[in-house]
Image 1 (tube, rainbow, N blue to C red):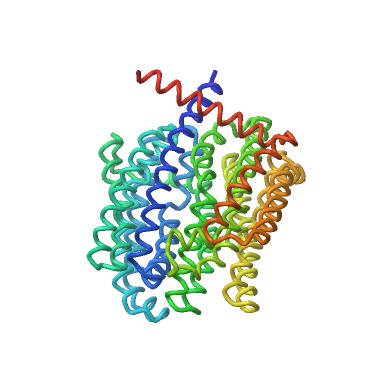
Image 2: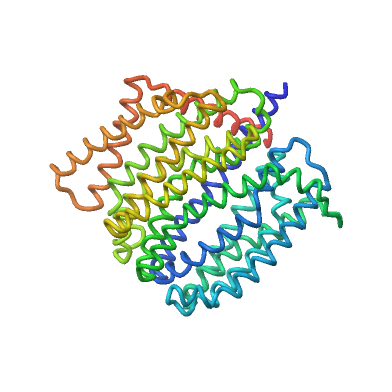
Length: 492
């Protein structure tokens, strides 16, 4: 009975989170097209550099306590209040550090305007800290409907404000305002919507209990963010802001594509994993289905983006961003592994192995930094990006080894389950490229032909070979469709 209720909530969560993510992606898609024609690579480069420091600071503020509160089955009012005041206090300290460090950061990168941009952008830290607990409570209870609605409204509102500012010549400050609105609107809404309020108490014992789990989650998240952002620090230092802008546009476009489905699954499945942490067989079954489903959808999608990158960037962002194309194509290879990593990470976290996860994350990030630095030294920025690809796939191999050891889903089974979708995608990509070279079509017609042909062949061959992953995709699609139709009938 409990599992059935949990399954119903999870499916409902997937429906609402899907609506949220794809609505956000649609808004981001069109805003990216419009803003890329109004703003310059230099503007995006400045924001790309600044966001590195903001992301790292946000990791410290959360401190892994958000995950600890979800993992703990029955957190108390004292637990929530303790973490709330911790978040507020640490955000004040971090903002002061950023404020004082901004002149040195500006000088380090040789970009004078970074000083004021960082000081204004840093205000996000206060706002972020203010409502972490409220959003955490909604996630723990699987109340994704309200989170989704607020996120969609926020995306639309931030786009409108940013567009108006860009049209009036505010340049990089348009993007600064966008980032602030994205955090500020949900903060105000969740504060009034969630009836919870902190009590004026800070429990050292509660802090220590959550710290035992959350601290290693914090270190893991911090290391992951450093590993994800180290290339931005290097590009920002060794190359001009415009190059950082090209990289940022390529990275953000790839990340939006590679996480379009995995973010939905991760947001919903972590609370589910936490509920089933003592039932290893159920965990194995869920992880297998999620991994094969995600691979069967994302592998062909990423290969289509690789072979159609030039017409996509030219059509969407104009010739101004054509230098982003080779960066984007390389990053798509990393995106295939990145979209799968979170499934394994979340399962290890959910069973309480945060300390183990941190230890292996430390190993992954040290090796990953070596890949990136060596690539940069040997082959410049493209070598750095190739290093990112090796880094991402190495991290995935480590993740599946952890799942193999602690949950029982053997690593060789995981790799074998990925192979049909990967091999089929590579074969079809080669076929499409060969046909393209023979036909000699114009840029946009060629891109359209390759994408359509790829989809048709992939669906046809998946059916012919009766791939297990294809059946999982069909099963999830049918379940989601039935759930959506039920909700519509209830409304009527």
